[in-house]
Length: 41
Image (cartoon, rainbow, N blue to C red; front, side, top):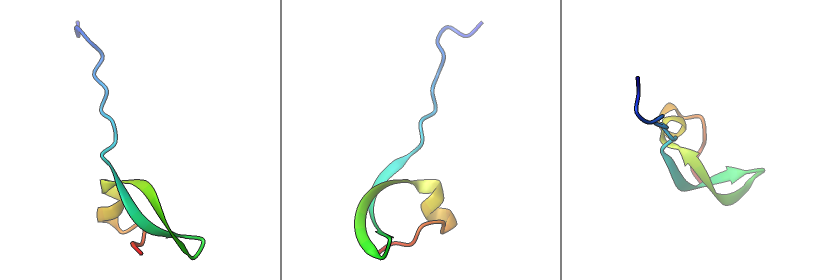
């Protein structure tokens, strides 16, 4: 029996990325940054 339900939230960082060709500050998970799924601006 687990006393409390633990939540494992995503590690979010505010990063400047290109959204529609324009730079924008967006919260992105560190796994996506490491995997190269988003391109920094």
